[in-house]
Length: 627
Image 1 (cartoon, rainbow, N blue to C red):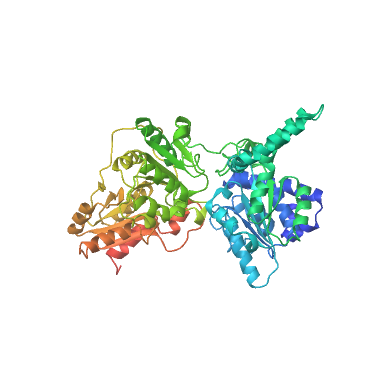
Image 2 (cartoon, one colour):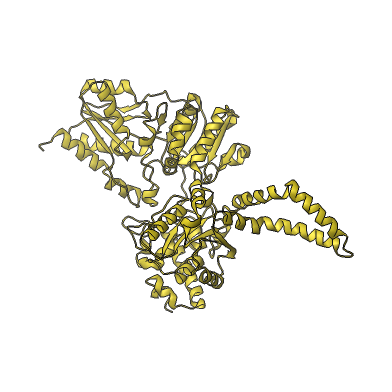
């Protein structure tokens, strides 16, 4: 039987379908998403949760004239399939294929590029302002999850609200992942009202009157108590959004397609700012994802029939090594605490959470707050570790500068996913952190070459009692278990792995050391002898070793999975300039001055010139320019 999905080329085609056909299409979309993500990996649970919502929005509004902005973009797979990318959807997250996130350059239906949380409301307000300035009439729609709504940027946009949000629709998707803290905040607001003396005086007087009603008085009072509790979950959210200047509608069932269509048709002609509160379930329609939505948030390839991953790494990831090492160090020092921004699983903190539930602080999607919160802890005598992906730490730059470094507070930054991360692409590569951390006075920056060195560096970081960043990559280490030792890393001291006659590769991190080692082997076959250095510290650099090698007259070749501008290679050039040294020649390899797309990491490295062949060719050209 021909699929309805095969007849859908644009959202306009949905308008020809009746409710029954739309529900059939929802089932087909889920099967297509599950099949593709099972093969390619990706963000499954969120996309399955918004299938009906996506269909209802597309059926009701006129895209791309009307503008639809998704927050984060984890949930945009159905959106992509329905907007002319169905035939290419099998290339999802592959090199040259469909991106895992909305991108302006990919489709006119992607009104705004996303990848980080809490941006949709600000972007929607900007689109609305642009529309109004040219006299447009299109509807601006933003879809944001309850977790992303906790981000400061989203709240700042809500605060602007009012007239600025004319003819806009915010869809608040409560998807049962972050609903507890969100509803908790609203409930707390109502609790303040319920304990207010004036309110309670009025309440007591009314109850006294009601109790005197023969036969039913006590039952009515009991019912009023139950109503009071119900108000916490229903009236308060609406009241708060009304205060921001939005008409609140909901909550409504986000999987009731007919109900969604009916509600959106009533909202469509409204010119006021509207907030529609929908309740959905992450992983909807796929039992393994429904049971464990966090595991199926972002994952690699898996068996679509069972939900089981196709491969299970035998060795620990760097994130897992970090989490186990932090747990061990916290056993020894009760002042060590950890802060994460809604990512305890992804950052390897699960063992720590289980062992020290009172010493882990998940602040939600609020990276800036996480850093300043940690600064306050450090000022109070604790030893905080802020555990974030590199790409998300960049959201807290001012907090790092003003609240940590300026005050010389001993905060340890565990910078996970440093370097290229692969299929998540440009919004998630951790290739800027050295540039935005290295220039900060008092900051120490390290990168290990393996798991054992990561453990030693983490222990060293807590000993230094100053701002310290330890950056480490995505991927597997060499360790199968973590053992704490008394090992520490001498501040600012590199490790000479092998000696060289013609120069040295300063290669940052284990992956780049392996690439540089292979390049040195290629050059050795041509008669050139290059040594290998594990820098370990980007700040401070090993000044003595660099000056010693400069005096020896060989070439210094820096290799880093980081942008060239402001990275380790730049630091080496700056050191030589400050010492008045014009030689030896320095050759830098790193990420070029462009955003790197999505794809498998080996392919991305080749595109960035970070393969053994590219390194060897670059060195050869410098040594023998006329060859």
